[in-house]
Amino acid sequence: MSMFCYQCEETAKGTGCVKVGVCGKDETTAALQDVLTHVAKGISMYAHRAAQLGQRSREMDTFVIEALFTTVTNVDFDPERLEGLIRRGAALRDQAKALYESACAKSGRQPEQLGGPAAWEPESDSSALAFQGQELAIPVRQGLYGEDVVGLQELITYGLKGAAAYADHAIVLGKEDAEVYATFHAALDFLAQEQPSLDDLLGWALKVGELSVKVMELLDAANTGTYGHPEPTAVRITPVKGKAILVSGHDLKDLEELLKQTEGKGINIYTHGEMLPCHAYPGLKKYRHLVGNYGGAWQDQRQEFDAFPGAIVMTTNCIQKPKETYHDRIFTTGLVAWPGVVHIGPDKDYAPVIEAALAAPGFAEDEPEKTILVGFGHQAVLGVADKVIEAVKAGNLRHFFLIGGCDGRKSGRNYYTELAQQVPNDCVILTLACGKYRFNKLEFGDIGGIPRLLDMGQCNDAYSAIKVAGALAEAFGCGVNDLPLSLVLSWYEQKAVTVLLALLHLGVKNIRLGPSLPAFVTPNVLQVLVDKFAIKPISTPEEDLAAILN
View 1 (cartoon, rainbow, N blue to C red):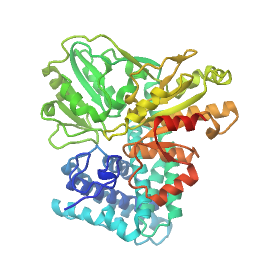
View 2 (cartoon, rainbow, N blue to C red):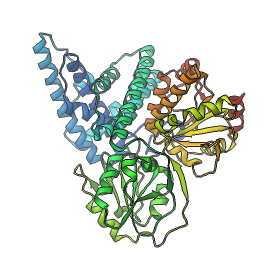
View 3 (cartoon, rainbow, N blue to C red):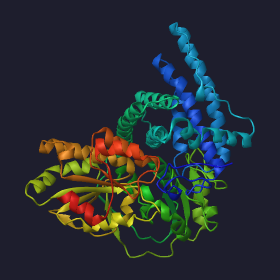
View 4 (cartoon, rainbow, N blue to C red):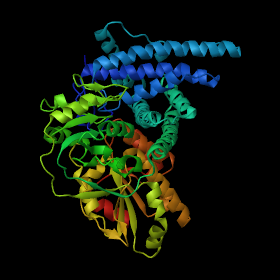
């Protein structure tokens, strides 16, 4: 059995992983993820038609979200869990068919006879089920439709996967939208078509961008409605003496549950990776035992987790193969899973994590305190918009650079460190996502009291950047593309695709993207993006700065 995957930036040789994923997934896991995506399409084909007739099922809605999120890079590496999801999905697909046929009967319509994913049936044997994934693999579709069509299909699929991750976080906090679910179903139904045109594919890519904006808005409302708007906050980045638990991933609710269950137990909680922005939310930073952030971005976890003297919880994607040295003190929850790693179920009982933390040595002493500043969400930045506008008009603030996105292991990412260091002192750097770890511990100073480095939060907080850019454009009476603002983005996995499509939907142009361009974007598709949106690959910090500031 072989595999093919090119959904992340680290794809082997820049073309595709064919033996084992750079992320660590094997061919069985890859095949089952392809099957799960196929099953989600089958559910959506019926759910989309049922919704048009006024019938929907929340269970089907949320399952499709979970199925897509499960297949994002570095989420679920457990074939047993994947098989369980596939079989549950096949049963839901049958229920979706019944729902659609019932809706047709009530409206006096003749139901369509659907094929493809809607008619697909899983093998009963586990090995045979994985081999079914071979028939669904990208090379098979490339042989049928060509690389350009399949590349655009994957662009849409990856945008949906990233949007599903954000939608899942919002669902956890009680924020849902029937229109969002309907768009997911409609998009997956479109992807099930056998002969899509390039124009329709490009149109749907932008529709997924529109969906992404809605989903990020929904998640922003969920996060701020539950925990308050982020506030500028100094976060300790050096350890405190005592027992310790490290929380990585993206999910705010998981962190809150752990904080509640550890309160008064003498355990300090640290954030890692994309959880750093949690320190800025009033509803989370009120817990005194949330003491700081440990380490950097996800790709350094095997060394950082090895050195961490406590328990570790992975709440969403970002997990790598655990070392034996910490295998018995790392835990997963939500959709993330690794074979043999203890999983905290939906009841969110963190007792095993607490037990592991108490059994571990913890930090022996306090290290000298060092801090970094976070919490510049859209409300915080717009709260000082008058000072920003005044600084621009006075000529004290020349340009804004949004330098952010995913971090990763591939060479070339030192570009972002060097670019940030070379940005002139009369310019402000906005940043978000884990790409900021390339430079967020450096000193940048301020411009008239405005910090030159503004950490806007997680990758989904691209919504904050969108809000700020829109407000500045309105204040200066111009379009977003006319602002003294340049976007220099790094990408790794599918949520970065989601953010990119959102920006393209909003008409943002001249985005610089790196460290390499996606393997699924063929030369012909790239040319369309260049012609329409002036997307360009990064070059060198010196060349890009000269081009931007001139």
